[in-house]
Length: 293
Image 1: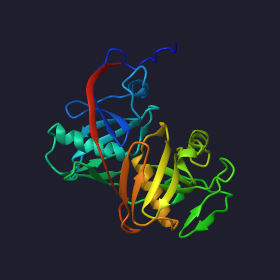
Image 2: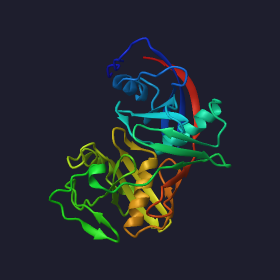
Image 3: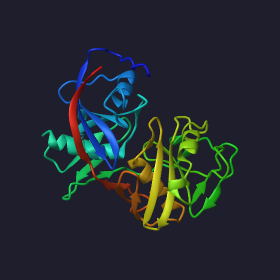
Image 4: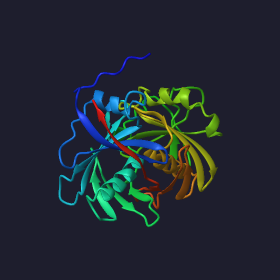
């Protein structure tokens, strides 16, 4: 039997809300009344599916810290690392703050560690997130392309990263780093084998989310994502955005695409090259509870 993981501060009791968006599941912690101090070991314990609550990511809700910002939004992967962005989590974030009475606005602006997002609830209960513009400059991803010769397709590059035979990656950032690989059949794609190799490849200084994209038509795709610090998840919002943006720039996709993940469907729209990417999808409450760390 595996040993129970130790916590940073034993005896701390945290109330939480479990939520999910397209199968990407989250533990939401409320820091509106008092700051939530969460160390890496505590985050790992909460996310542990045997000894904790179980989640792909942990989301912390905080008060806004600047004019025009409604809330602060912090994200921790199941590895314990604090990260820049989580699109599926952002949808759950809006449902949470509205349900708790922290706002009655249909749309709010939230501050992440490196970005400001606008979240808007739709009449059907789904949430649209303005994911901001994608970034392509290698130093902003970051990606080291030294010594590589890309294959240009449409208006974008596919990079022959040394992760396995035939691996060609489209690289970009949605506020966090992504590498997208096209596959013929996503169900048979070697995600468990190639995902970790791509995620931790030395060319990505801060590691990378690895997306495996199957194009069904110019308006419809299947997608699996091996997330940085979390492994394969049932859905990845930023990964869906990155895959669609890459597909548009490579000439494979139109400007609005339905993305089928293992956990559900996301609608991604990139209206123009100089526009923000819009992601729309579900966000649902699962249960509430408390955990002692």
